Length: 380
Image (cartoon, rainbow, N blue to C red):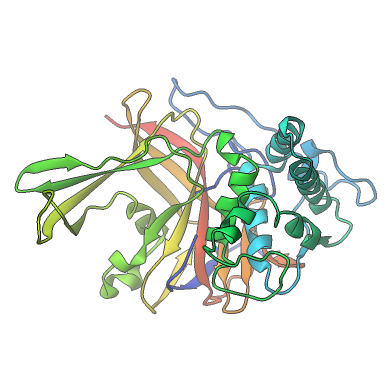
């Protein structure tokens, strides 16, 4: 397994993409960095120490959840046309942490009054356990089919919004991580997990007048969309992960109805500010890459990025340092996911095939990049 050079992945910018992000890519807890150290936070912000296990464990005996971080996840077998689900589930396990997600599902199962929900949660738990058992690839089709008759999946079908048939292997544009993940999150109440609340406050400015846009504050959102259509074609070759993050709070221009009843639209400046309810709880950020132009862009997944944000709890402006941990890509036939393991090495998951990530430009389309918070620094 290589470790001497940084992997660079080609990312063809297309019209689709995929907030989650966090700790150990192999399923470790959310406050860890790739090297296993705790998040560096200001003195007013608590962190936690973590211990990195180095033993590989026995392939004959399934590991206990505390030992999941020792291992890389195994492959998934979900059937043709369901790679979107395999990549999405692995992103959740890696982003949240296998032990934390497993504990959440146990609590969900104990609280649910619906037998089918309890069964689905139990299957999800078993899927996580099998993913770290090292007894071969994990069959996921039964778990996916069990979701079909549960809200919100059945509600979407009944409303005719799209034919999201999990029990069919036929591929459609509707079967994407960005559409599957929010439904899975809603079903298992992942919004109750800490670390995901995030808000981008938009303010319109016209002729010196400012008008803040009313938006839901402190909302849970699994991923933050970034529209590459806002980037000039000549700037695409210089696009990197930092510039991708900067788009979350970049100034922009828009045509809006400035006054009620205006027949014509008015050109305004759009100012964006990232606001986090509580920096002590902020662990992860996943960006969904959307829109764009047919230009080849190469991203270095090892790049460290910084996000400027305001802690709504204290009013403190912060610089949040993050590193990539998971990346979902589309290779023109199926979704794959790259996961950085506890040794800091990228591992490629292509359904049942799990292998060391190579360093060649694959020219895959980056759909979602998941970051873990490694350091939080107050700004004066």
